[in-house]
Image (cartoon, rainbow, N blue to C red):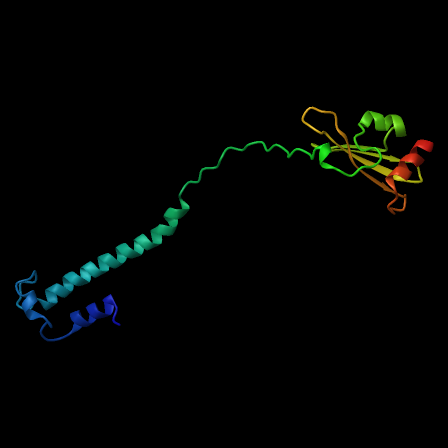
Length: 170
């Protein structure tokens, strides 16, 4: 299949009469047959079309880069609410107890870590370590224990009820 350029080139460089002499008589070239004048006009149009097309194609990616993007205003993200105390069905020692009551039972905690939705209190006595996790059951309510972990000083899991008893015995 010939391209536009190759068919144009073949037609305008051919010697002899134009392949369609009747269609080009009295054209802009003023000659009968009009081959040379028509080729000059076609050549100028082809060059102008090629340059225009090339410039347009090269400018398209640049135009895409210049498109402005709208940045939405920054919004403060609210932390997700902690799980409600009622979401935990596991029954065990200390569940539902608040921080004040834990301090009355075991004394001052070794650690008191507060984050946006959770509070962790850690109690220990050399025989076991008890971690109590407190969440607020509803907005504006006092956080209560929803989960308890207990371990020995070496890291082995122990029964939370036994650890709570050992911590109270001090």
